[in-house]
Image (cartoon, rainbow, N blue to C red; front, side, top):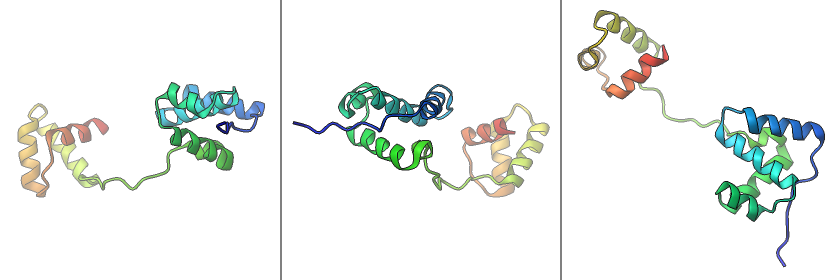
Length: 133
């Protein structure tokens, strides 16, 4: 017979914190992990939770362990290094100035920017940088 594993019974404050994370977190991953812990507390097995959330059984097991050792902080994504930004603050400032000069000419802005800075960026990257500011 397979061994069933559940989280320890949740306190009222833990239930409230998990419910808040499940309903209000901006991060989809944290919402899903909080939901998994709440379902485990309700008596759902790891296999049932993995079927409902459509994730691997190993992932659900890992979330339960992280909850037990670190609490809600264990369910949050860990910081990652990611790619270094192509554009620095000076580049972003220069882009804003160039847009004031030529507001509706993204292709010519792209060419001028490359000529001035030597950095090759896509129009998508330029648009994304301009939306941030």
